[in-house]
Image (tube, rainbow, N blue to C red; front, side):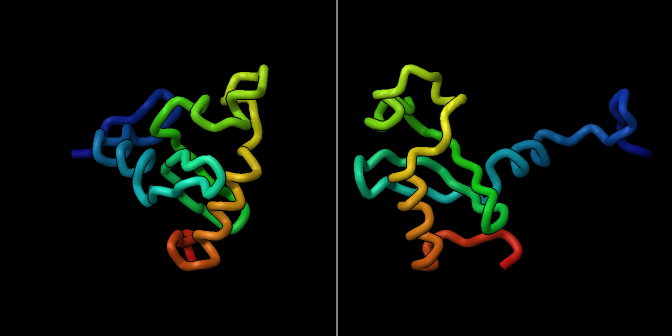
Length: 96
């Protein structure tokens, strides 16, 4: 029996497939400046997915901004911490 399809012709993802797409490969990373912890997935050397596990206002850079966190670039200090984890081998890059 064929899987159900959406109106756009693509198969409907199961709950497990959706969960894996959204959270598979995420690893914890702590900012070395403010100690905020996030979950990170490096999809490529230039593409980083970040999931906040706490309110982003715990980061002083985000807290000081008048823009919503979703509209801000990643905090430079957090990005440096992610880059350091990649260089140290603590965080892998998909496909490498």
